[in-house]
Length: 181
Image (tube, rainbow, N blue to C red; front, side, top):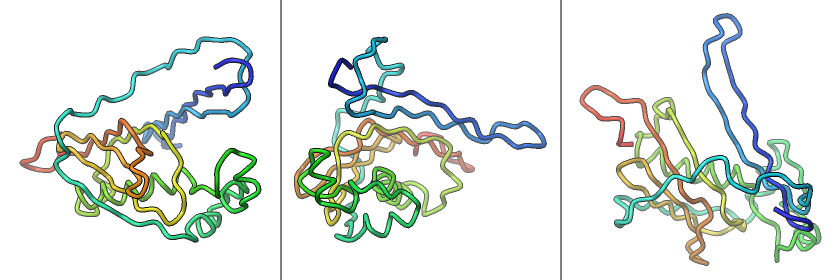
């Protein structure tokens, strides 16, 4: 991204059965490394983001986050102070501590589970999304869902998109197509 900017780190993790070798999941990610750019390389993204439909979403689900939620989420082992310390958040350029990205995704996934899969997580075969802005603990997340499996999530209070270009795909059930989602 250039000197003084960030760098993009692309990663891929393959999870497979140790005995059979069967691939169970592939997790691909892009991590933005703040302030670590300037070493050259291609500045193009490896993949194009999923395009959202142009029409209004078919379903909208609002879910709140709690003011202390980032402190609870730290119990998962992510003790980055940007999520708990106002001073660390300020050094990172934020007015206050931010919610963990995976916690934000978890809240959106809750909406997707409710809207698409009747809370049956085993039905999810694919998930992709772009993290586009931070969430502050205590904000309400609105997940906008389309029947083709597209989604995005925004903060209601600030009208800011925080998860963008999302797409889910479910395993089909009898009499159902794989689009919903």
